[in-house]
Length: 118
Length: 112
Figure (cartoon, rainbow over the protein chains, first blue to last red):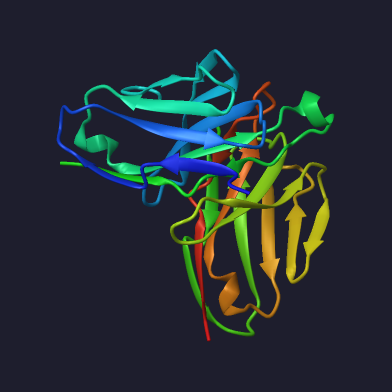
C-alpha cells in the first residue's frame, strides 16, 4: 500500500536553478493537490487538478507550474528557484464526490519534500 | 478571503490531563475537517463535521462544530504521549475540487 509517494524527500538548490517534484498515487484518485507548509502558516494550496490533463491555480501559485499528463502523477515545477520557495511541499489526492457519491472525501497526503534554496 | 485561526498555537501538558484546542473562522464553514500531522509525515484526517451543533467522538477525542458553523473545538480526554502532533483544522471548499483552506495549527506535546 504505497498511497501517495513524493520524490525526492530532500533537495537543496541554488537560487535560479530549476527542478521538478514528483507525486505519484496508486489509489486511482481523480483529484490531486500541491501544498506548501511554512512555520506558523499551516498548509497553503499551490495548484490542484481535478483530472488528467487539467490543472488550476490555488492560493499561492506564483513561481510554480504543474502538469498532470497521467492520472496517477502530478508534477510540480520550479522554473527559477528563489529563497522564498524554501518550504516543505506536500502532495495530496482524493476521490471525486462523483466516484463514491459521498461529499467531503478525505485528502491523502504524502510525507513531503523538504526543499531548501540558497 | 477566509481566515482560520487556531488556538493555542502551542500546548504542552502532562500525560493524563485533558485539553481543548479551538478553530475559529472569519466566515461560515462549508464543512470542516480536522487533521493530525506527526513529524516528518503528511496530515491524516481525523474527522469531518458538516452540521451546526454536531458532536463527533473518536475514542478519547471529541469534536464539536459550533451552531453557527463558524467555530469548532477538539477536546482530548486523558492525553497520552501518542497524541503528540500538530492538529490542523481545514475548511472544505464548496467548489468542485473541494480544496482545503488550513489553519496554522496547534502543536501539542504530551509529556510522559
